[in-house]
Length: 315
Image: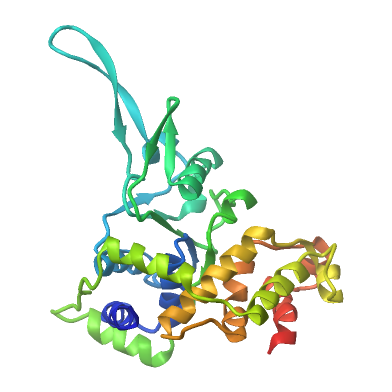
């Protein structure tokens, strides 16, 4: 499995330049069986990354461009009334784009809260309910949503309940000079690189089952619990957290971190996760599950700096 995952990374690297950490975190989210929220300015290949992942894993993908007028039925599907030759009428369910294996919700914060909530059941239970009838989604099923942090006009911030459904929040930054040079040369010529299919959906699900069987040492388990529980201001032992955090991560954060460190160990070809995995993945797991109070924001404190206080004792 380690060899196959290295081939996956190499295939993605043919198309995505200078975003290895982003690629690895997205792979971790998929191997852990979760969803990911990618946040970054336009032009950083977020959409291209999702398309490339679908090609590499051989997944059926769909794209939804979120806008304020997008309705839940535009994502989930709807029932239509049909009449046969005998004049009998009946309803038939027409599936929406959510019935795929990899759904990209582009600029998800531009959709209205009602439409955003339509994805809650799909992300958590892998099924949707329309007109009182439940419909199972294909497996594997993953949502990779993108969000633009700059354009705030006409956006609707995701509620905490929906943010918690994302295993990781992945911040996409600018590439370094050499990566941007390579991208510039590779994408402005007559020939363009294409990703090659390496795995299939069944192999991805097999990898997800393998992740859950990877053993985790007691020291790593204790580190995960200590990290998450110290992120809650009412029970934290860290003064900076008690002073700056309004509310902290719930138990789902511990579950997400446990799966994420296992997936990172598998990608690196290791037999078990380490404390270093916990420190590395603390920010992607926690930054959308915590919120600062007004005084901390006024003082210029950021969530990443608060999380740094949590991880300091493990470094």
